[in-house]
Image 1 (cartoon, rainbow, N blue to C red):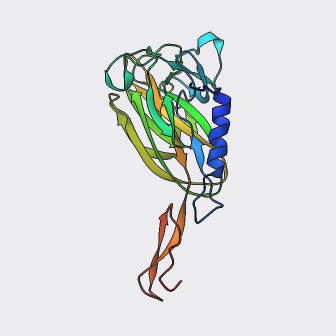
Image 2 (cartoon, rainbow, N blue to C red):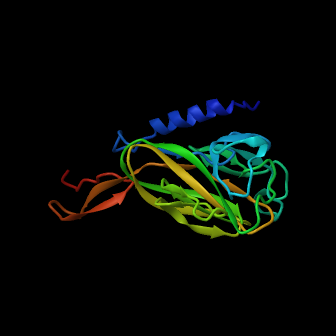
Image 3 (cartoon, helix red, strand yellow):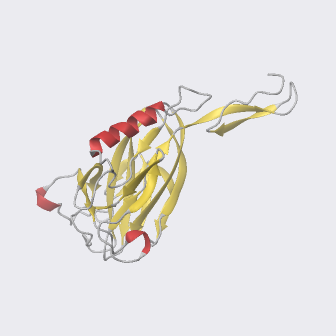
Amino acid sequence: MTLHLPRSIRLLAVVVLGTLICHPAHAQITTGTIFGSGYGLSPGDRDSLWKIVATPSSFTPPGGQTMPYDSYVTYSVPTSSFIGYGTPQTGVTGTLGGVPVTNYWITPTPTTGQIAAPLYKWIAQQTFTVPQTGFYRFDFPAAGDNAIEFFLDGAINTSNPSQPTISGGQQIGGLAGGFGAMTTFTGGAELSAGTHTASMVLWDYGGETGAIIGSSTFAPTVAYWAPSSGAGGNGTWNNSNSFWSPSSDG
């Protein structure tokens, strides 16, 4: 028998798990999570974690909504046979904390149709909590029709009304085009303890539009001393999610 837990309970479980998972040599270090798109949901639902925060000025949000509003979890963008494109109610299955999870496409409307004359951009954001000040590494898969990029913090820049973007943020990875496969976004950022914002900027050149984002669990990078072999040997400082390794004499 498969037990299906409500999304709220699954979110709580991941938060608790993230609080309990620590590095074995640094028990004070905790992890944080940025949840993927459509986490714990199905096509037709609304994603309250990924909010639509900026769109082309010519676009009017459905139903008279004002930004920010919950993104729409939609059916797959019908273009390629890869990762469920064209097949209703399919997404990309990965893991979060060792537990299988499925992520789905999100859009600013209930459908995946274009929302403005190309080229245009729209932005979805999620707030997340950093447990302690430090340098954090991020590594997660994502794809966007037609291209996608990610920033931490910064401000929404609408100087080009049809192409909102993020200014002053820390970019994770680069601009990735081609949505027939997931792209791995990797990068690091110095973050203070507290609340931060992850921004997904979607570039659309016409036709279908949508973004799919995998979850990212992160922990601060630890500076540790790596001594050379032998007692009293010199060593170097390294930045890694690792721990102090004593020399043979203790």
